[in-house]
Image: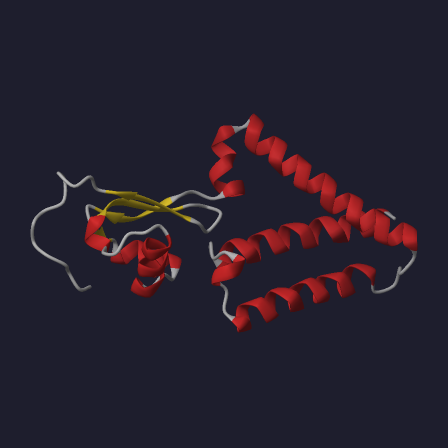
Length: 159
């Protein structure tokens, strides 16, 4: 049983690192390939964890260990604010004053089409109308449109 808990703990942290490296894409933004990879990761993880112990107690131990580690990480992020960026991720400013930040886009693997889609979803037609766009750790966009007095009268822009 201790071996199961140790293996589960190692797999938990390995998955946390891999998912962090995969980026902030929401489930709805994933390509079919990325979704299949995510399911395969889950299947491979399950196989690795229960390879020899397929009993109910073994499965319960794995689920309980994952649940406990999740609660402990959440508590650690609450208790020690300096750990929050490593545990929860950090928001990224993607657009400032209508200008996309290409470095952030490259780092987060975002395309102009991703930004345009997020803008359209919030009723914003042109990226130039965005004062600030933030990619949240959850993968969602927070978009703040300029007020009509803030928008320069340059006409629509194509990026």
